[in-house]
Image 1 (cartoon, rainbow, N blue to C red):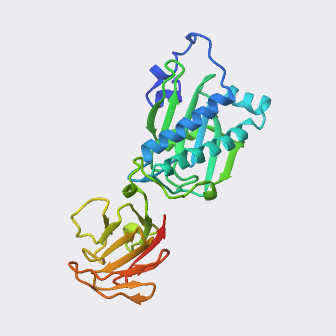
Image 2 (cartoon, helix red, strand yellow; image 1 turned 60 degrees about the vertical axis):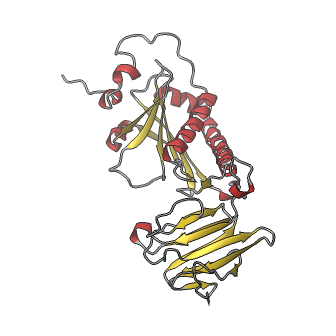
Image 3 (cartoon, rainbow, N blue to C red; image 1 turned 135 degrees about the vertical axis):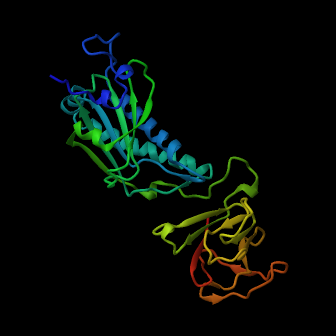
Length: 319
């Protein structure tokens, strides 16, 4: 008779994650307390930020599947009823604190979903004290062909290890309706104030934010953002070869290289625009085209709408 391989054997970590069948666990296993679960979720959230974030954008998981031993799960539900829901809400409060700290350091926070989801589940191969974490970028996303990032903390080492596993392996997990918690993502809890970089120089302060819509399949449903930190920036198209904070490159053939210059007058606390592209419309007014060597400046009010060559839309917002 063939013995069905355990969950851990199927993903190749049986030897170090769990003790051998029939052998006693060395030492007394520490109980799985609410505080242990809470701290574990927070660490999983921070780890997702480290693994998913890029450039100035902070990216993070929105769904958290917390895997427990069956008896541990029932202990929470029978003798600590409601505690998992409280852990979920307290975790979300901490998430907002973490994200607001990132904003103060000049990072940009945009959610991938409009909700937080927590699923507390059990698995027959988990032993008392075992805890696992599975994170998803978008809750209820239909990404069945993609692998999931799973983090385990084995009681033998106490050190977290992360693996990619296939969705099919998760079919043995038991999901409980009373272990499901859904919390709305509230953007009002994110403080989108003027972010400042770590250094105190005024040139590193964020002066304005540009938001651009590109009519290209690769950018369908997406917006390209640029944070103005220099008092003068150049807006260019996909032929631009220069790099740096003073260059806002829009990857489109419909944008001239260069197309615009935008500067901030600190004394007047105003923005000004000079157009070098074929056609620039500012708030439905056609801008006069000027030469790069002799720019003709026009006032650029905040919350303005700019159209480049009748195709590319760009908005400017005060940071």
